Length: 553
Image 1 (spheres, rainbow, N blue to C red):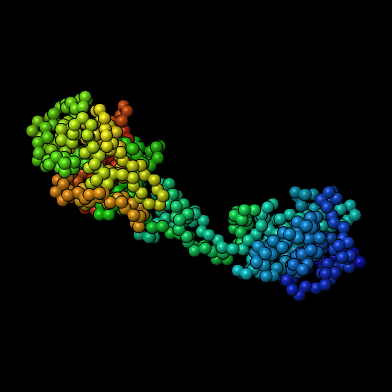
Image 2: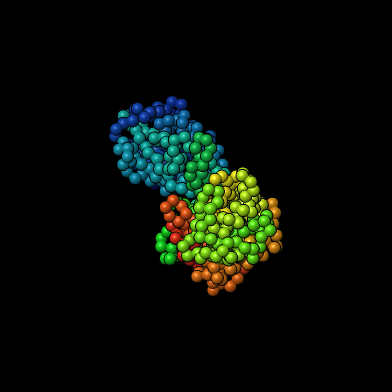
C-alpha cells in the first residue's frame, strides 16, 4: 500500500502528538513502508524539476511533522524524510535541547501550492505549539516538499524548517533576556521624567552615553524567552518573551523644566542664530540642572575650550585678595592702555579711563588695563614665576580634570602654570592660553555664591573631587560684592539689573578676527554661564541666554 492510497484518510488532518503516546509509525504515515534504513534518500542532486502532487506533498509533510512531534526516539525517522538526514537529525536534537522542549504539536497543516521561489517544490504551512520549561510558545512554520524522478518525496531541509527566522549556523535557545542598552531609562532629577533626544535635543549624546555606560556597568532584572543565537552563542533576535526584562533606570541631576527653558534659550532670537551654549548648576551642590547648545561644533556648553575673556577676572580678583592682600576698595587705575610683558593692552571703546578707579569699579566696568597692571605687578614674581593665577584656579575653584558621571566627557579648563611672553599678562583678562567652557564658568559663579567649590556632576551619586582649599569667607564676600555691582550698575546691568540677588560677570574674548561673548551669573539657587560664538559683547549676546535661565521659574 502506498501513500497515495491513504490520502483520503489523512486528508486535512492536523498532526498533534506530544513526546509520548504516538501511534504506530505506519499508521501515522498512512502506509506500510520499509524501515528507514532501506529507504532511498532524495538528495538535492536527484530532485526532479517537477513538483510532487500537492495532495501527496501535504500527506508527506504531515508524516514528517508526526515523527518530529513524537519525540527523540523518532527523530531518525523524521530526519530520514528530508534531503539531508544527518544535518536534520542534529538540528532536531539541538532544537529540543536548546528550547528545553517538553512537548510539541502541529496544527493547521496546509499546502499552499508551488513555492514561488522554488518551482519544483510544494510549500506546506503549519502552526507549531511547543510546551517549554518556561511556558507555551506557538508560531507559524513553513517547509517545502520535493520529489525525485521516481516520485520519492522528501522535505527540503533548511534551519528555517525549525523556525522561519532561523538561518545557517544559528540555533534556538531558551534562556535569560538581558535588558538591551537602548532600553536604559535615563531620568530627570524627579525620577519620573524620561530624558530623550527627541524631547531635549541638546541631551541626545549625553543620554546615549549615560545609557550605554549604565548598560555596561549596572544590571537590571533579566527576563526569559526564546532567542536566535549565532555560532558564538550571541543573541541575534528574540522570538518569544515569557518574562519581560526590567531595564536599568538612571536618575540624573537634570531639571526637566529648566532643561526645556535652556533648549529655548540657546535659540533666543537676540542671539541671532549664532552658536551658543549654556549650563545651569545648583549653586548649593554643583548638580547640573541644564545643558543646552546650538551650533555645528558639538556641545560647546561642556566641551568648549575657548578664551573666557573678562569672566576670568573673577579668579584674578580672588588671587589679588588671597595672595596680594587687596580689597575691592584698593586702587586699580583704569588707563586707556597698559604695557606689560612686551605687549600693549587696550580696553573696550566704551570703558572710560579712570586713574583713581578702585578694583571694584574696574571689575564692574571690565577694565582690562587695571587687571593687567595689578595682576602683573602682584601675581608675577620674578622672570619666570607666574603661577599664582593657576594656583588660585586649581586650589580654590577646583580647576582640574572633572568626571561628571555616566561616562560623559567634558573638556578640562586650562590656566597654564608657566605662561610665557605676553601670556603672563594676558592670562589675567582671560586671554592667552587660558581656556574654559560654560560648565567651568558656571562652576566659578557657583563657587563665589556658595563660598565653596562643588565639582559639577550629572549623576547625584557621582563622587565629587573637592578643591584643595575653600574660599575664605572674606574673599567670597568681596567677590559677591563685586559681582553684584556688575549686575546692578556695571556691564551686565542692562540685562540683569532688575533681578534680585543676582551677581554676574561679562566677558568678550578675541578669537581670530572675531569675538565671543560670555556671561556668568548666579542667584539664590542657580549659577548659569553662557557662551555665544561671534557675540560682539557678553551682555549683548550671552546675556540674553543667561537671563532666560535665571527667569525661567
